[in-house]
Amino acid sequence: MSDLATLEAELNKMILDGKGPEAFEKFYAEDVVMQEPTDPPRVGKEANRKAENDFYGNIEEFHGAKLLASVVGDGVTFSEWSYDFKLKGQPRVELNQVSRRQWKNGQIVHERFYYHRGS
Image (cartoon, rainbow, N blue to C red):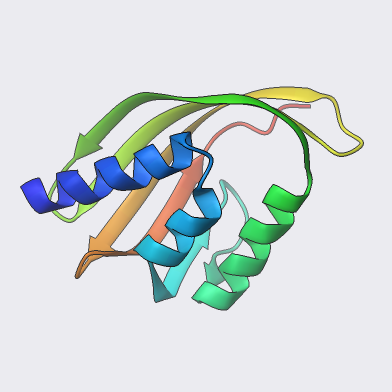
């Protein structure tokens, strides 16, 4: 479990350092499945890379990210985040999110995000 704690800490540090796309390339498996709260799962690194690039490319202003908590279990990690950003053409958002990551052989094979989209 300590190896997983090291991987999780490195991933979270990269996110905090504004290196989300680089972290995606380093830590996510080719067959990764990612899922937003109520959306269908996105399967495969290419489909998820496109979604990640679309999201990052749509950020107009980024006001910060804060890691609130991180927990490591047997093959799974959870991290709680607070984000403050503005997407193009939309109002500024303060978003609290939990990311649940399932790991295998040092890579994330499944990630699900939990947050409320708000109106």
